[in-house]
Image (tube, rainbow, N blue to C red; front, side, top):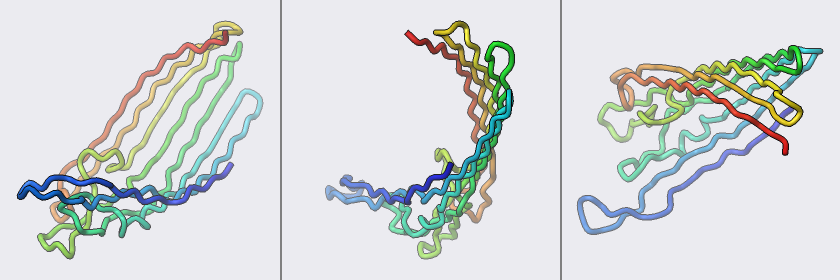
Length: 191
């Protein structure tokens, strides 16, 4: 399969009271969703399944779009294009019990940025609290158990992790780390 999604800029609309006066300002905030090109392929052979996916994200087009707030009139960001990759393996055993395993690699689009005190040279980089500020690797293991013709139990364990360090010349120096662990158990019935 294949798909394409066009890029989209999102601009904040509204105003905010200035901390220094009674005046209201209209903050310059703009976010960016990248152009995306997705390719995927899957194959089933008897009890075995395999699927491969790649998603090309054109983040660098947003370098002159992204702005982060009232204090940032600068539209220079340190965004790079990324390619997300994933593989999923499956095996069906006795009585349609299905075992699944997947691995995904999702690079961060954010570079370190740059700040030396000169506003005209400032580049927005990775920021604390952003979901995509580190390159993430994800592992998932799951199983689907048909209990009856009307009820299936699904279980899954998911772990995503990543870390990076932004040096002192970066926009926001520090150590960034992200880790997510999810346990899912669901009963799906047909009534």
